[in-house]
Image (cartoon, rainbow over all chains, first blue to last red; front, side, top):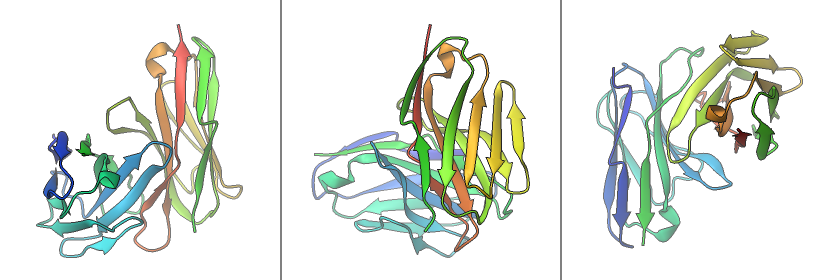
Length: 113
Length: 113
């Protein structure tokens, strides 16, 4: 049972380059989330998808776009990477039950130079 | 707006000591609270999920308590071991919006052999 899978695990980009971070879950979860984690700032929500076909902005959406491709997959795109987007990115998913908790992927460590 | 605080930010204890990590939140309207462990350079592993109607949850040497009315949760670790060294994060699931989790910035624990 893979849970939440994120690819790639590491990436170095030059300023202005674009890339897509992939996230897939095999637990039939309804909702999926993208967070970034920076030292001293905890996890901040970038975008989320409450259900297949819907996406909404979180706390820090600027510079990012997302696609909920199907129920399993939720991708995060950086159209023109900036050094301020150097961070560790985590994807999480959760069932529709309000009693449920998050399951996290292992993260993508992104460096923009 | 829900805010989650974890104090202290860092803690060093000798092996074998019992310890308590604190988490406080400003809005008691939550569905549940989740404690996570994060090892350096790794993802988040769920330790305990405690529902708003519960007072505590236990798993092995870990015990989490919840006092929703006062906006506090504690994670008790019994007989600490060097392998417990990690960052511990708490997150509350809000009852507003799409019920997403709000994270604290974590307590970095070091258990000395």
